[in-house]
Amino acid sequence: MPRETLSRDQIVEAAIDLLDTEGIDGLSMRKLGRQLGSAPTAMYWHVGNKENLVVLAADRVWGEVRRLDPDEVGWRAAARGLVHEAHGMTLRHPWLISAVSTHFVYGHGMAGLQDHSYAVYEAAGFTGPDLDWAVNTAFTFLAGAAIDDAVKAAMARARIRPGRGEEGGTVEDVVTWATGIAAQYPRLRARLEAQADEDPAEVARRKFEFGVEAILDGLEARLAAATATATATATAAGGPGGDGR
Image (cartoon, rainbow, N blue to C red):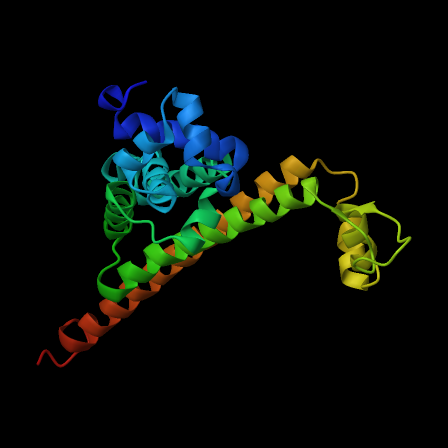
């Protein structure tokens, strides 16, 4: 595809496809050029360099997150939907978390998502710094869940030689190796045994839902406490039993 007919959008979309299958280390202008039928120089001409392309791709995928209107579904349903949608996006694009940890990713995709997050928690009743922290709490949980997903994916691919390079050491899959270590600690062993027959995907789903609902419960409790405090203050100042001054 000649440089003149190639667009930045086409390059970014192709880069996302390549990142999804091969990760950041597998992305190169040469591979991308072959995929698009164009010379690597055309990639540089449109997007600058690989680092800039990763930033563009990362910001693009943030824009995939579907957003519910809190005025239509209520703030809690909108907040729940936002976290679940964003989590689904990180599962589709497992390279994203490593990208945001090594690149400064910011653009309209991220800004639009942040703005919507503020609208959701503003609709709940948060204001000022509490509004900032409510948004940040949900995002921090999402980032932690995405890192956990990435660790599990790495475990599924990895193999390890106990003793780190000892000659003749037995090569085991990393899950077996890690389980052997955890089993030496009583509480970890008890939880491993309790979960032995459970479907890992179902456990992961329930774990994520528990975390989301715990956060929303906590935020709702803080709103209720703040409302109760404000009501009590207003009553003491001028309501029944107050001095009215």
